[in-house]
Image (cartoon, rainbow, N blue to C red):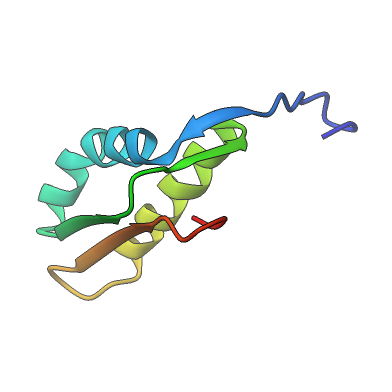
Amino acid sequence: FENKGVSFEPEPVDLDRLIGQILGSMKLLFEKHKAQVSFEKKGSHFVVHGGTLHLTNVIYNLLDNALKYSPDEPRIEVQLNDRENQI
């Protein structure tokens, strides 16, 4: 980050909200690929300390790769689990 001039300012990020927004923004792409997408949550506290932009990029890339490298009509399952001190 230092060499590229990109600053990183950690902040509280609600992964439940973030994943919901990303899934919503990719809805047309999922429809185009005839993908079935599910989003399951276990627990209730999904806040992490990180960078919203960076986490958005990671989650988007994972979902985009799932579409690219899956056979026709992919099935994508997103799970968010709150386990004591881990998400």
